[in-house]
Length: 77
Image: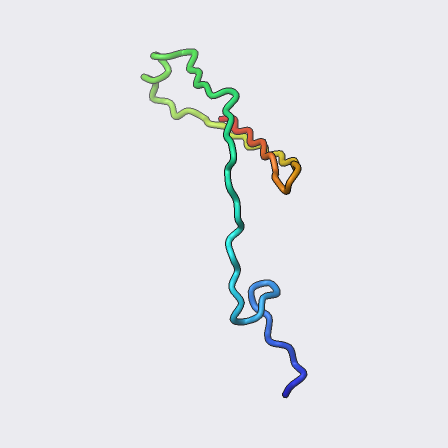
C-alpha cells in the first residue's frame, strides 16, 4: 500500500476517469427579427469593391425554475 494519490490529468481528473458530455436540450426556439436589407440593390451587387462586414454577438443567460436556463443570443451582421 502507498499513501500517494493517483496522478491527476486533464484538470483534476485521475487516470481512468472519463468526462461525460454536458446534457443540454432545446425546449423552444423563438426568432424575433430575421431580415436582410440591401438598400442599393441591384447596383451594389455589380460593384467590384469587396464589402466590409461587421459582426456582433451578444449573449445573456437567466436561471429559470426547475434547473432550466433561458439563453438570449443576439447576432448582428
